[in-house]
Length: 191
Ligand SMILES: [Zn+2]
Image (cartoon, rainbow, N blue to C red):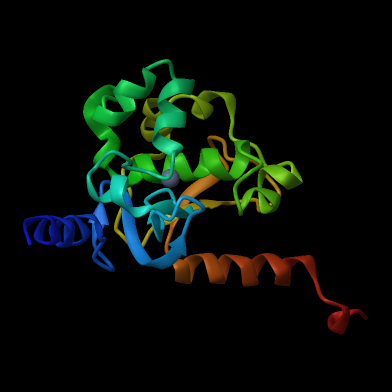
């Protein structure tokens, strides 16, 4: 009975709660098992990436992101331990701006990410000044005005660099896109 109780307890402890956030990972839904029979869940990372991961280590806090945090830390020379502890300069890993910056790196640098083809894949780059420095990025763009705001490129074919980005809400982005396509002209208004 004791072992039965323990295994039930282990299952409870290891099973993510849908919608709950573990580190930077939000549990979305069960996603089957891996080849070793371990339970997988789909998680959404704060960087925007969605990934199927073994659930246990996420629930226990061993894995705190989709891998982007560790990768960024290694790139910045702060080591995997630094990533685990969130030891980025100024302790800013909990800020929304940090995760937006991680997302920009993902889109522009890592070809394995889903959204890379729409950004890095078509030549959109993250400038040298921001590429490996969250501090520079934050200093240039400033704090996010509200939770509704994300980083928008002013010229859609331009890069993520000072002078070509601004904080915009979804509504502003749609208006901006409409304005851009209108300014390009359409076949219907040729004289
Ligand atoms: Zn991530």
